[in-house]
Image (tube, rainbow, N blue to C red; front, side, top):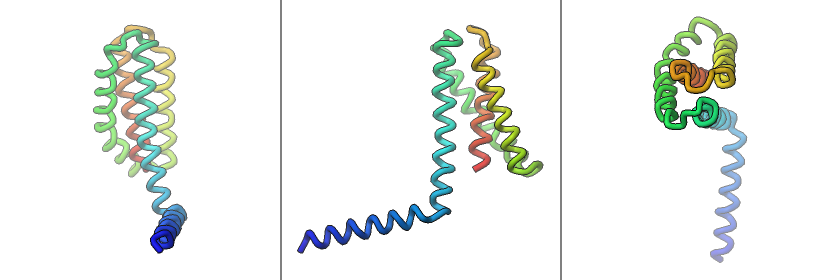
Length: 135
């Protein structure tokens, strides 16, 4: 008798999961949250690799990351205003351009150039913020 109850509970669990996965509202919210966190992880990991290998200053990573996250907090209201002025599509285009400038900076900034590294940290924070604001 207890086996039958467990199998019914398992069946009800999978029915509930299937209903949840078919819900577009839940899935879109989950995907937007995942994309926001993924963008933060990607930028964080790339900044670490940049600080360690390209800039040859691994001790600078904590400061660069703190500046990037502070820049992200500061840029969220800016992107909110920008979305109200332009369409979401235009704002996303500007945000992608912003991120491209960040990646170009990762490639071309010379080693041990601290002011340019700080500019790159600010740019990366603004790039994270556009991803967070769009969702």
